[in-house]
Length: 243
View 1: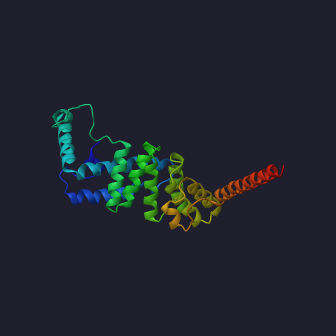
View 2 (view 1 turned 60 degrees about the horizontal axis):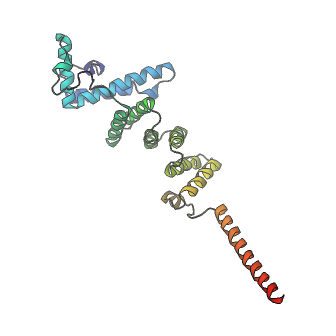
View 3 (view 1 turned 90 degrees about the horizontal axis):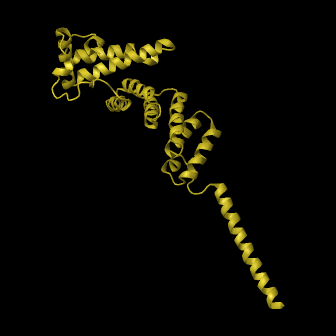
């Protein structure tokens, strides 16, 4: 991957030129603007654009990219000439799902929600079995004020991976309530109370802490049986004394 070609800039471009080109291309190829087969191409382009920007904004990685560019034209191996490269078979530009996720977190901290969303979507596509990725995507969508149904899908995916995560249950319940889906919200709240009856979010949502009505009913039944048992024992003792 040649980051200079991807961002459509010259090798000696300034930091401002790099940033301006990145924002222009990222907006042009953001996956949310496409549907169907074109969306896959846009995702691939957006991923390459994001990675090229990550390379060129870092002085050390940019130096490596410039060296690679020079060596590509001279015919020598950039990996062999890379200082400190103890593993020539490893491409330092390769990224793991967690790399994309960490970059998404950084972008979000820098208030770049569009980039954060694109990056975490790539992380999820590579590894959809990480609940944290789905929860973070929900957080980004909430920040952007996106459609609640899209946010709900993220929470549902996370809850499928972590079925006993009380906070996820309750955050999902809040979105169901906002859409008027009270039955589904109530079911989630009840599950959450059974797992963690004193969870702080229950109080924030105005839900009474402690055992549920069903649990209270069971407790009263047990107590009632105990009273009846004591009464039966007393009556039996009276009968024995009379005999």
